[in-house]
Image (cartoon, rainbow, N blue to C red):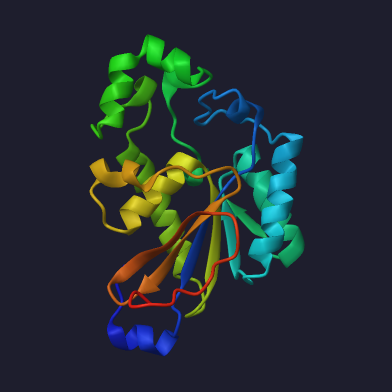
Length: 222
């Protein structure tokens, strides 16, 4: 989605997407690959979601959408409670399905599927554990985000509560990056977020793996 310079000037800030990762789960602590497995938040994860929700509520979002997996839905519910907004749950925002990798620890994946893991890290298209390609995740998630973004006011904010892999691939797709470069975006910590803003030449990454409210950009890049 691109907009003209005139359109952006009319809008001022333009629309903004906040892609927020869910809080901590027990499998996160154990470094166990979750994928589409429906794992709940830990007590720590609930606390993370409540803290982050207080910050994000101050940005006055216009809409919230979320993965229907428990860890994302529960995280989104904390923001909904503060803003009064309803959460639109969508299975298209779920984490990557990773077949037999799901439930394995990081070390177990390397030990049992080392070549597959190395190929994925090199940026090759790999069906991890016989599951989805990263491009397939982007193809299901990015259109949902764009569809809800189109409903926003001209300078509105959409919060997307999802999962680390799905957020990274969605950002890569929206920014127009080649899929082999998506890994260069890096991961998101639990309950941290990335922000994409609407600019003259399309979507632009404004923040990544943030856990505090943004400071204004002062300089030639503003």
